[in-house]
Image 1 (cartoon, rainbow, N blue to C red):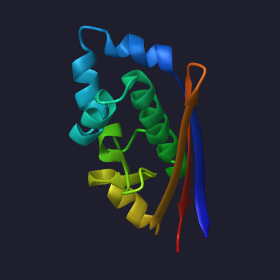
Image 2: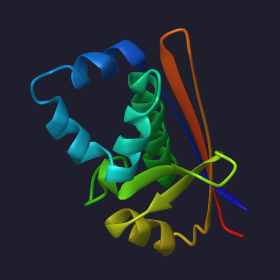
Image 3: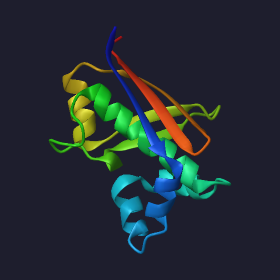
Length: 127
């Protein structure tokens, strides 16, 4: 049963501006896991990969109905990929606790980027 749907859109140029700020490295550490940072930095256009993952994190908290509040932070939401490079979501800390309390045990995510925008959609389910 679907219990939440979220979608978000992020400007790639805005993400690039953030990454190029003197404090950009601190932003990365507060928002992305080490594995996400490593993955994105290896991409031809890292700003697109970071923007898409940030959109997925925003879409997830919209689907949860929490936003980034009550102890849920972006770094607790890890956008990874499976063996076939399909995007997947893993949760840690408070984000995991909130999802478990709502009986959510399946996370589906789709991410895309084109023409300077990154988009993500997340569906949360109880199965």
